[in-house]
Length: 272
Image (cartoon, rainbow, N blue to C red; front, side, top):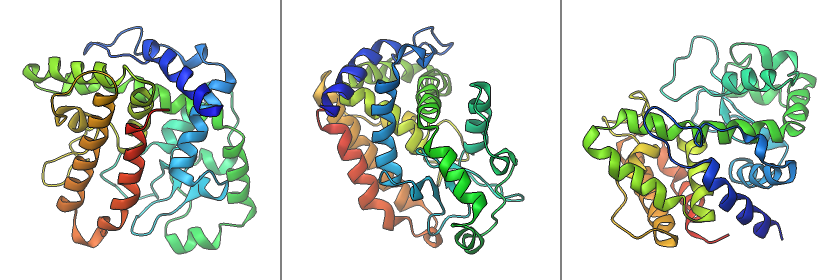
């Protein structure tokens, strides 16, 4: 039942989440207000499952080998003061977005930087009132988090096309169109931008090679529209993530994430 509901939602959102020209379009930039609460809930729960196993505890996480905590259903990055990472810091962006929607985050979430500066400090405070209150607020704002994730996805294609050489833009646009022609392909485009970014930031690269939406679309093989395109997007995403792991600093130990990352990408190829 839920799968059918999500499939219907995503097929409808092909129009509103569709591709845009480098300067943007009203379709790609349209508000999520056209989605009902139950439809947004279906998408949010799927991403929550991907990132946190669908658990409330997973809404505040400090992954092994990382220098920062991750918050919410989308595991939005939140850097401690003084740390400058290569990945886009998205938790402060989400908090600003949530406040514009009228939400009232707890005081700890209004801090510019994560108050926990190490994994040990984070784990020690995990059951404390401050972090427990933050998890409770996050569990009650899944709809707003889902809006934020979809808005980021809709804004990604114009950035991808602008960052790409002019000679590549038609192919990138075509591949986006092919993938978005299926329900699971549209879900893949929404999820992957939240998962690994749009690929336009030069800091989000190892040895000059990125792994975001730009790279996944650009490295797709020539296939027809429909499920073949969704399957190829899934395969290209796995290739790009394997390349990331091969290029990553050995000290990060990113190979331990390969199976989980690939399993997530496998969901893009399966019809909903």
